[in-house]
Length: 591
Ligand SMILES: Cc1cc2nc3c(=O)[nH]c(=O)nc-3n(C[C@H](O)[C@H](O)[C@H](O)COP(=O)(O)OP(=O)(O)OC[C@H]3O[C@@H](n4cnc5c(N)ncnc54)[C@H](O)[C@@H]3O)c2cc1C
Image 1 (tube, rainbow, N blue to C red):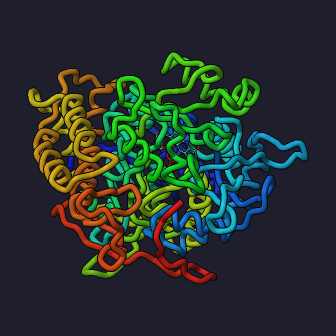
Image 2 (image 1 turned 180 degrees about the vertical axis):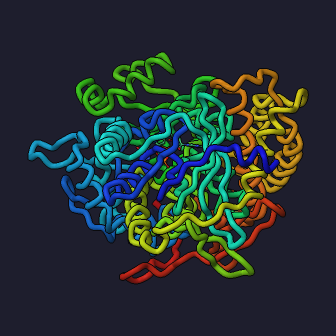
């Protein structure tokens, strides 16, 4: 093995950032501008990262169109999280929001404009004024292509700052020494199949979400939870993985997203009787209640026989907004509806169903981006490792994320992690620590086993089994026996994942090899999700358990941590104390 290891090419950087979505690019920009050597790895060309698909907007209490304050934004985010969000990180995020958005504006991001030249803002689910009184206009938008505008802006800034991009490179494993410090990654150049060791004084995981462990999802094909798999294999726990967001409006049968911005602009949901049913469930916020709430209401309507068509979906009506608003503010939505539902929303309503969209959980991190683990019941920072964006549980979204708070989380924590690394850098400046040979060997072994196996399971088949199991066991409403069964089914797939093989052994752009490596990450995410969900005996945010329909703050106001090695759960307190203001105490969540 030693001979193979020696032959591995090595590269050294101050920082390796894995992921070129909004989070990775905002972080790398901060680092490159400070003069650090930065390598950004991405499985796809940076501007094809999933951030590009974000539609509706990025939140900030600019108050351009209606009065707004960061305290209102903070209250909405805490309440939206069903009190599982860490209030220090939430305060940090909402206070930074206006500056983070103005900074993007100055970078050249093409926001829509009001007649007075300020940034256009639309209402979004769960965002209110006066602590829950009525919807507020807080989502800064570039039509319904906000993520597209953001990602291209950040990419161009990075090119100007001379960030080094490793395009179509897949990170495989973290390298940790005996002290637990992270010293870089192993990675595969997809074009050649060659494996490299990338040494780094700081390693940033910004690998995005893992929505592809479900059969019906709004997520891109690349969202397979690689960073989570890497962390789990390296002994780092995954936090709050039972909380997955169903977006209320995926196109029925297709899964493609129809932004909440449609309801922000005045669209609403109808059942088969033509009733605007959200008025019954959420008298104040109606169709702009948070996503967990709207998804459950839709599911309830469908279950009680008020679904449309064959009974399996409801309708999203927006024709009353008029052709001009739809073509100006929601052009991509119209295109998606025509292409995927064969419906022109200028004339007819769109068939929609709740669809998996976002993971609230992830790699535990503080608001500097530092990864935090637990050793012998004590919190411990993992030296040299950071997690930002959707792969991280920072945890500002708690048990349920508010729309537009993710794009905000990317730029706020991407920037703060960058700043923190720059501030720490002199200490680690002079040399790279010796690399842990055992980790390099273990990573190589993993790939070599795949290469040499000549029979076994096909990656696609195993991936599909994971997706079917997740889809049928972890729904909008959950049942304990189903969750337990789901955990068993997923556990039973672990040997199949270890038995994956592919017949085409060519090195050049071998997508079969890449899929096989992705499934090894997907299974970790699925194990974490089912195990964590089957053990949380309450309903909170996106985790709605039939047998325990109420939130239970006495027993369950705590974060779940799942450890892969021994499939073990630990719990850790929610940080209820904000940085400068009073804590927002739990109360019933009505809208
Ligand atoms: C359809 C859709 C619409 C959305 N709309 C909104 C919205 O309007 N507002 C909002 O706030 N949020 C929205 N969201 C959520 C938000 O867009 C995402 O949470 C966010 O963009 C994730 O950004 P990220 O930087 O964490 O990761 P991504 O943008 O997902 O990027 C992940 C990066 O990691 C790379 N990567 C992954 N694994 C590896 C590996 N092994 N090796 C190398 N590179 C790797 C990928 O290539 C990619 O570059 C939406 C999400 C979807 C799916």
